[in-house]
Length: 354
Image (cartoon, rainbow, N blue to C red):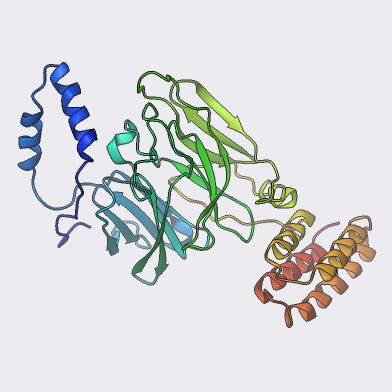
């Protein structure tokens, strides 16, 4: 999978950080020029992959391969084939990959410094130790933006992008991710050019006098909760709470996605069973984006609440009628696609057991 790839572009460490590292090495009895000379003698070309995320449902894998981000065709599992490769001089070490649910985007992380360095200080560039977001079309990956947790950290906090997973909020691409002592960050990358943080947890430095290794090594969503491996403190378990960025109905709909087992690097396709929270989640998104008139959104909410109190044939009839009305609403709506999603969710509810 590395055939014909040249050595990727690299960037140097900031001078102040290089000087600090050299001082630490001298204090430990190591000559920093020896390591620098050894590094200069390393072979050219790409290194092996650090992590790979396979997405069997779409036949693709994302390889985070030191100096490259690779897109692999894995439909023939015995013979994976590289179909795309990207490099970036702002990236130091391509560490892990995550697809969005429909496979139209891929996100790569940069674990600059192996997770032991402070890369979220106010003086650090936004692009350093961040995520890079690409759209995927055929064999092509097209860069769109970077995402980095936005709160500046101190020089005593190791902070860099690390492991995370998708949160199954319908209709949006939401991810939660560990940033070592930068805490955990939940962000929306539905618009790949404008990712934005929607939730966070940050304790502050483990030691306010010196740099020590600590923080969230990983955080994964699993059946309604987020489980974070905190290097120094142990296991943290979080629950998402509603805010201006995410509604209770969106959270409730996410909780309907259940797995018996999750390996975050064997990415499962998220599918939502019919539910009232699913329909309400799409309505909340329409309200947030002004994709449908406020009066009509309120009326649909009332109809859903009325139907939820019914059962049997009366519920099916009410929901079928509402779905048909929403089909008509879609034709004149500002966000026709999302209104159709509401209509489909309501129609699926009508066909489900009451």
